[in-house]
Image (cartoon, rainbow, N blue to C red; front, side, top):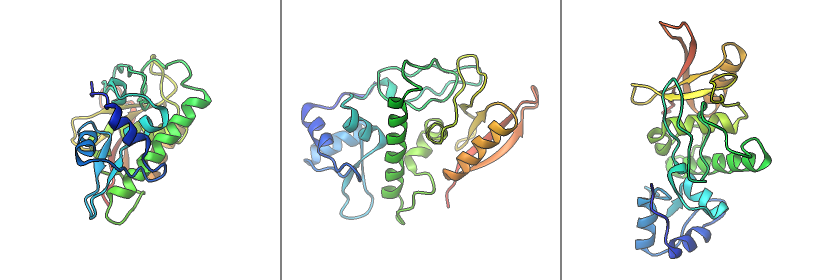
Length: 219
């Protein structure tokens, strides 16, 4: 579980620019936020610090980071639900929390997606937002699930039916997306391609089930 920010660090987060997430604080405070995954140091001069998507969520909700800030990876048979009361993208197969289908959830998903787009803009030298950034490559399952949920795709419930399921694969930069065959699976493919992912459709040799293999696009 991530350590909670101190009161001073919480004030730094609360004072961040609401659009860009640019931070002001002492070097010690900023470095501590980076270690917690709540901020990153821009690689180009003047090397300012900015909130990550997790940092944006804390600024907007006042929540503290916990285990729920990371989405459980799970396997093709099921998923461990996120815990801790912090936003986590729905990867499919977990029990939905109360209110997950309501307006508050939609606002959280929209905020997380906008924060991720800002992180892309600040991470890429050309300021591009049409392709994944380093954070997404390090959190493939979470990033793909956020792109799907933000576009309105429906995650599967605990029974695995009627929705997408994002799962890790043995490949270092690829996730598998399972879902109902036909239009729903193609919609997931289109959504991920628009979000900057390379997508191919495949068939499980044993079950003959169709699934997507998606990787972050590099250029």
